Amino acid sequence: MVDIRTISEQVINTEIRGLEEIKTKFDANYTILIEKIIALTGRVVISGMGKSGHIARKIAATLASTGTPSFFIHPGEASHGDLGMITKSDLVILLSNSGETKELADIINYCKRFKITLVALVRRKTSILVNSADIAIILPEIEEASKVNAPTTSTTMMLAFGDALAVTLAEIKGFNQDNFSIFHPGGKLGTQYLKVKEIMRDHNNLPYCLPTENNQIVIKKITDFGLGAVAVVNKENKLIGVITDGDIRRNIANNILAKTAADIMTSNPKIICDDNLAIEGVNIMNKYDITNIFVINKNYNPIGIMTLHDCFKAGLI
Image (cartoon, rainbow, N blue to C red; front, side, top):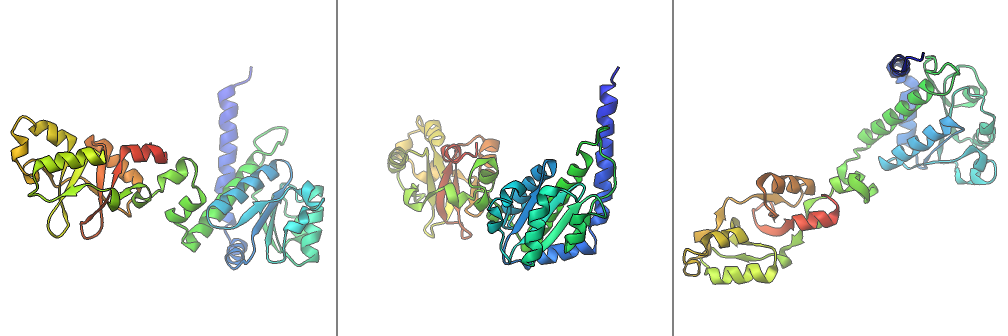
């Protein structure tokens, strides 16, 4: 009878050994590869066949999304015209377990003919690909996790190497959250890096009043703007309080129209700066059970307002 748990654990343990061993490959060749990519005026072109091709495609996508221009090219398509996509200013990385993958031959010959930097990411020390490469990264000789030698440990190591390469390059280039959000405008990843100033309603749509104003004016402003809140500012235009629909309801029976904004406002309101991440504003609103938050600049001047509705529209919630 097959011991499901034991087999599954053996697979993971074998791949873990591969990942531990690959840390030894961040050597002089790896440093040279990093330096060449940093100095590159073209793009990183990555290719592989079969399972290695799937990993190559993922590495190319990760590089491209973290600030290193890159694309995947299929070896079969390369042999039928797509070699023209590779220029002399590019760097080519070929993934192969054996280093003898015949479908890569045309890419290898093309790189040698036009003196394009060729990098091998392989498992065998002696192979056509290693002998042809300008830089060879040899993966540790850890066995595959499958008895039939299906690519498992080797592709895991390739994938991890690609992640290490992409993250290292991003760190060196100073690639940050702002850059990342530009490359990821759609989906949850992109929205997590939206700044407050990108989704807030600016000062042209901001209701505010002085602390001395009559609450009849305050109520009209809350009604006209439809945001459920008014910013209370002093003569220097600094935010000193907020009046919400809730403040109005709580004071409606206390002769509210005879009072001023200062009498019913909430002092020291929850605020956020325009350069903060919008998700931080969402967290504040959730924590204090409020539906909007005023946005200030470094001088404490109100310059906008962000509402839960705005966050819904932006896909933050």
